[in-house]
Length: 273
Ligand SMILES: [Fe+2]
Image 1: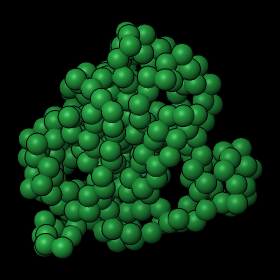
Image 2 (image 1 turned 60 degrees about the vertical axis):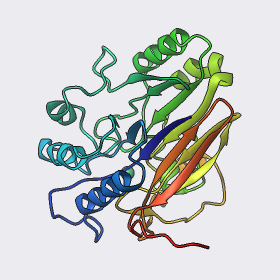
Image 3 (image 1 turned 90 degrees about the horizontal axis):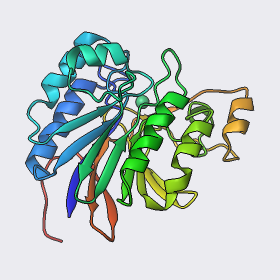
């Protein structure tokens, strides 16, 4: 079995600073402490973007300091709130696909994890250009017949929250063309961006996403499930929510992908039922 941790949307600001009434650094430290206390045997951790709320080298230095106690490798992906340059200034070992995008492959005994970069600088929607798609197509071809898992910040489909759906991955053509020949091998898509626990399937491919570690999006559903309709909607308000955060604990075997959600503010206490 492969066990790994999925964290998303940490939105760090400065040490001790609040964002929407809570302290992202304090909460991420609590998340890290809970992982060490309860899930230290996980083989790696992936954070699917929005690491920093407004980029900034000092914020990535804070992220590095908070993550340092984790005993497993941590793979960092970019979200719309991040800065490629500031991330690289602090994490020299960050993924690089050869074109400067933060993309890479992590090989495991359960298949290949392809880490994607959907950041479009100065925009909140996601992008996946032909150059990124060409890298993805090459990596998918190189993975042969092995199972594949995709990790990225922006989902390439709507989830029914209108203000969020207009900020999903737009112009999905290059992405869709790259994965089309390999869809049957894509066992799961892990993404962030939405700040809500959501799971389902897209064209037969299972997906999941999670609450962020600081603040959440309210479950304010639009009466449709369409990026195009969301883009045409005059009200682009995204409503926040104070729901408690969590992180994902993912178990993978040849037969199963199981995603658990672990609340980390409740502490490690347990009792017999
Ligand atoms: Fe976010």
